[in-house]
Image (cartoon, rainbow, N blue to C red; front, top):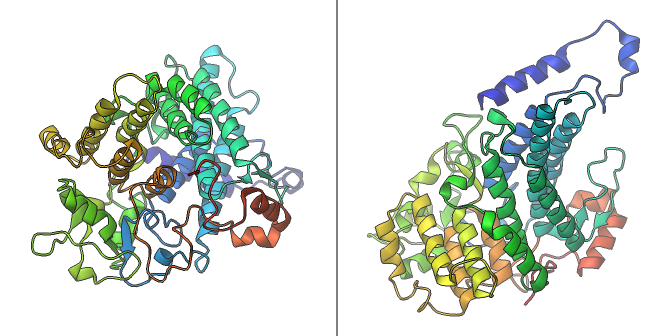
Length: 482
């Protein structure tokens, strides 16, 4: 983070310096400066903006902890009742990812490709590592946008001269993203450096970036299991030998204990001084029934020794309802966009589908749960006892493999609402509780396109809406099939 601060100061000095040659300045193209800004600055800033957005619980930006019913509001229930337009939430989320994340990654790429910056073989190897890291996080970001909206601007996105970019087909975007992952993996060279301290995910560890790229490929491939099982199997089997092998590989962001570099969850839960959120009865009841020891980490404020969740979407009294556990109130709680537990659940599901990923579905499933317990500071003995519960054990838990894996994966993703929602959409487990006064046919399975797109790019938006089956919250994405 110190490097980010230094780079920010340097950037401020760069743009504050005036020159006496006014005519010369008028001839300069501000979109293509001749003196480059360090790519490290753009890369670090984009990483932080990405994590801040995915970690946020602000209902003005990120409502993804509501959709899988991990939390529910105490007073302002509009968002839990799926009214997202009053706060223009889709537009805010869309805007941050395009403007603050992808645009900075693009700027980093431009600096890396600037002629003359890299000439020796060593310098070129460093540049290639950096380009691969930039690309992998671009892939992640675009996959989030596709998994949120469906068809989106892609091939014509990020062109400041084109305010009406066409929307690309979601499946076609996915195919191109897979190609970019493979290209990036081929560029990564463990004998060369990367971003070093400017890399706030892995501190320049190229081996972990290789694991991240393969784990991201695994996740995206598993999105395809119902729509293109043959391609899904091929991609999964390519990635599986090279994915995360422990919690040490998790794609985390080390937040600090003081602003402005705290976890954005803390900003809403603590710094705001407001009591807006409690945990939902949907997950509390599930974990109570399973006697899940992670309850003492996830939740606080038990009533007579029992955790009590608020009914989803109905409002709740903060003082008499269980809330986020104390760990989530820490300003330096690490951000997390992909972890070992999630990867092992993917491998459990892949094995259950007959893919060649080594070991049995049960072995991967057990390790996924153990990894979740370890991540949250619980012991292996506690995980063993939990796995002995007939309602948890792979051989005796209720339902088919999708229900067993989907239920435990949903619990493990408690603090990662976007992925909890995504996996629920794909596997349809566990069963959610309908919100009161539900005005939709079902729980949202996508966000609608931003209002701004209707105002300035409506022809392309309408074309995209027609292509996906309508710009509605209930329109399923291409990979979300029954």
